[in-house]
Image (cartoon, rainbow, N blue to C red; front, side):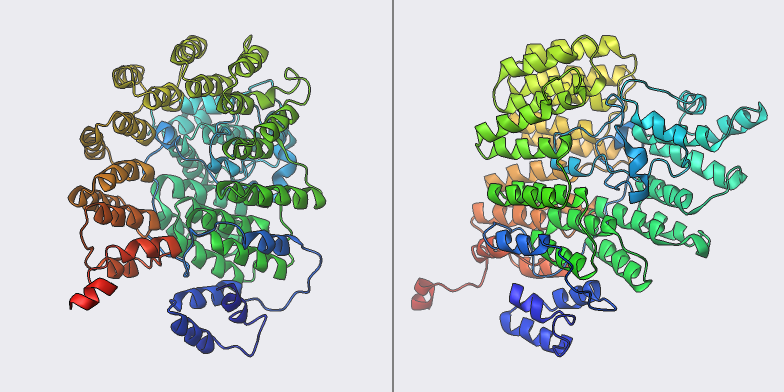
Length: 621
């Protein structure tokens, strides 16, 4: 397949036509869709000579021995998953927009007690790479606020917006101006930054709308990009794409389209992401590592084999990998349990002049733990500590759950002691998670209660830390009580809470009850449940061979907008296998969603083929 991809690339072999490529695909029984889209994405105005970008050659060398079987031949297309809520309900999602190159200086060390993405999941490769948070500023004031690890400074405008009812931001701003209060770029930027930090995208969007409508701010490209990002998060990709038509042509540049691209990636809308990327190339925008990193993130989730194609294109266009590029590759290798390959990525990263930051070290340590490499994990954790935890408090929230994964309760206690006198919110959450991993529910509860007494207003994210502990320990009664307490405290019960409630009941073997909770949640709210919430129920039905309920969950996922994902079909086919029944028309259904099976899934499909012939059946016929 790699030889075919190389041969079909018109840049490498100008005499090899797309028609010939399609013919090769047909002979090999492959879809020609992969050639159509690949040619579009890889098209370049000129061949750029090799200038020492070694990462691609390294990646191919280790890629061949890695298990990247999750991919498909074609570039899969699927419907976009639109945002469906705001504020606390959006806390389960992490923005995956990197900070553009010219904002690196302003990035600094974001205050630990304001940073909300944590180090506990692979999505955190991009959690702190949000859309330029100084898009309305560019001022040194804003940058200095972000660098400060010890002080939290909330603007008066932010406080006024937060204290108002959710849909009354415009009236608050009208009153603000009438009273002659400060509405400088610095004040606006600070308010916008803090609203985004708290996932209060609905209010942030109202602020942006008011600023543009009232003409209180002369919008530039980054201001429009910020507005586009917020529309996508609150109202979905379709509305965001439509908004671009309202942006003056002179401002419809690379920043606008890379913002749209990143939101397509967040929605895992493969088809739309590829369209946007190709449009950026067609318009001859200067494509930076940012756009390529978005494609890497996308294919890391849906088709790891395409990662090599993106790296190849980066090499041709002479776009050098950023630190974020290396983080994605490290995470990809780690997920595939290719520890050797992961270590080689680190060597390449260092050779390129990048040293692993704390989040990269945490990713490495986590994969060492999961790979059973205890000594390497411990060495990495000590490197994260840097010799003095009090001076290196930033590391504590990553260290706590990682030491817990190693089963080292004494180390968890030691790290917690370093921040126990004045814990920050993220350290509270990390400690709750750590004691939960160690099955010490009482200790987790004690830390949660202290967090409640320390902080006046907690969100669903903070309650969910303890709810996850209850779910993992099958403590249904305590979980229900906690959810009631959340509701009583004024927290909005959203998709993250639904997901944990579903998992709570699934872990306890109450699958039907879990499905009932999910159904009621969708009926009571317009918000969309998480993809994994559906999958965790569907997997249980598939294990039982319950074809009827598996098909029902498959249908509900499609109704919610989750379409064209290989994982859905894998679950469904497993239900037919366990139910010992043929899956009539399953290949046609996959084809309609532009899904192409990988090698492992193709082997599964054979078992549900209604018309397959075996040696025995052929003899009997």
